[in-house]
Length: 113
View (cartoon, rainbow, N blue to C red):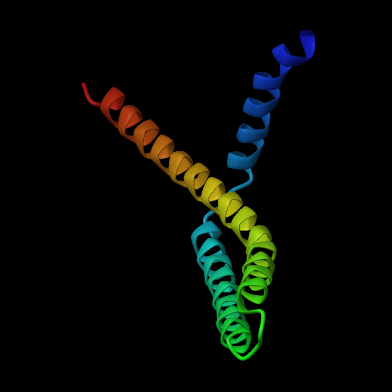
């Protein structure tokens, strides 16, 4: 039971560590990573389309199509996980940027008489 108490604290600590490791080059890296993932997804989709066309030349079309869909799912699963991680990093970066802007705005208002 006590293990579950520390889980939110651990998650908060990891989130804080992740946001502090983000820097100003983060948007460029995230954009490049997103383009890489999109290129991989496109290659998988092209291969899937070709395998689907090949299935129509066989006798057992439905079995072949089912197997092709399974292979596509298996190939896309790691990409989806990477996209989710990238989205989380992007949200953390945006949150960090927003917090910095709010902090600057607050300190600017405090300095005014």
